[in-house]
Length: 184
Image: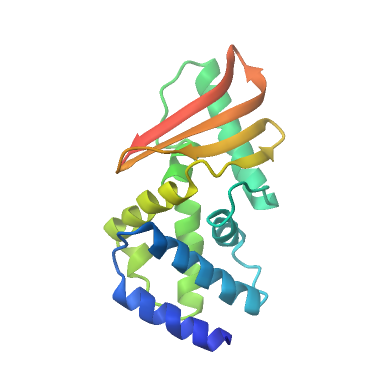
């Protein structure tokens, strides 16, 4: 199938599905995006490509971009543990749970290929996607995402919630892992 045919299918899909309600819709979206990226040999969207890959693999090795993000997350978590602080909205883990980097890259991708953008421009639509994507990714760990993290995984959670766990290579204080969660 040509890139143009895939783009047309994706365009129709995005026009018909403004608000995702099923996990299969997310997987289809990411698979079709990955096809376009591959056919165009487009490397401008490494985080989007990572999520496309992550959504269809039970375990995932990190990319260079994901190592940077996970290193930032690790540093924030260490500060939070060492200073006994509550998580703040400025922490990288919060942005990761809301998939802010993914939203930004997906928006650029959709605009580059002249595809509908309500999925990323409407916050309700985006949160619906995040809720479902977290379910798709639950228990699909990223192995050794950076030098200090052994495993990063989203965990099964109630609808509208995100849970996850970061297992450390070395203990941080008395902790060998960090649990995170949020409600949308």
